[in-house]
Image 1: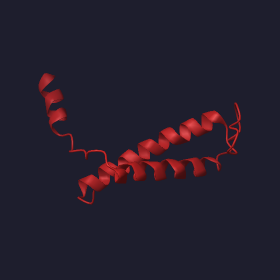
Image 2: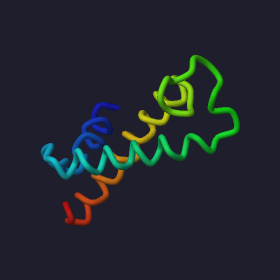
Image 3: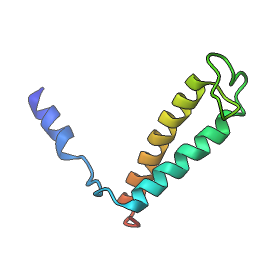
Length: 83
């Protein structure tokens, strides 16, 4: 059991240090997810966001998903040597 945990920890890919490029990638992916969240069936369920045409829970969910997608993009670009 312990050896399998150590084996899993040994195969973690190298992650880049934070730089403005990483921030821009995550920001753009979060913005894209917020724009795509206006296309869901009921984006206005819950308290309304004062500026955007979506609700606060939709905004928080879209930003969280945008960060997840952005991290995947950063790790993928790092893995292929582009970042």
